[in-house]
Image (cartoon, rainbow, N blue to C red; front, top):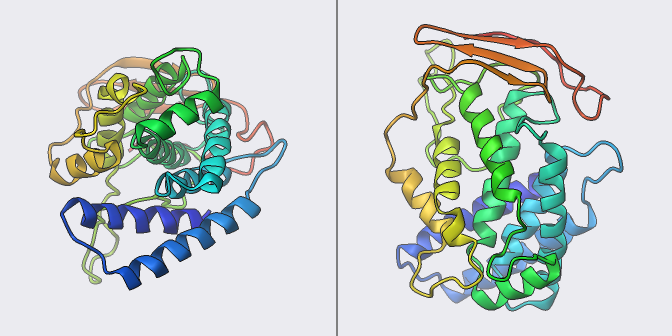
Length: 296
């Protein structure tokens, strides 16, 4: 997982510089590409898979492989890893997120972490050149003629987004249900605070909301099998919009909302939010995630 997160951040920085017109010197590129290959081999050989208990660690492994392999579209080995990892990623999206969009890990912050991984993986896949997209479609066995991802994935992502929106508060914090290790994948604008302050400012998850909203707003266009040559790569488009976006996401009152897959029941009006956790242990009933519940 750690190797995957490091490679994702390296490539995000590389793509930001490249999109601005910077030309990296050849000695740097040799070392950079060699290291990416080392990371990909390590992740491929040490995937955190388990027949029963799979979680965000395995999701990070798959995302790291996809993001790295997308950087080498002409390598046959990398494209093999990309195709295998994409098939597994789609399976894990349906396995690690309940049908109602909540996470099977029974922890709100792990839902946000896993959602961020899915966004990173899909934005990299949607950035592939047309020939690689066609090869991937054949490997996935997608039934639709002109789309890359299989039918039904967009609807599941929409439910994942709805759960994300519902558990985030106006102050940028998430409802604290289950484990929270402050995990994030890519933070373009990290929070800083003075050492004299007793605690850091509220964690700000708006970038995740922005990324998911942009992904779904452009899903039909980006999911087309042939991507126009002059179209900005979705990976860069999402990052550019995140950097420029400063407007807070809306948090409308919605009354009651139920997520029985995770056992979360929410009530929100114009004044307060109430959350109740009453459900099974996460991770296929094995547990491992504390189920402390609170409402900011």
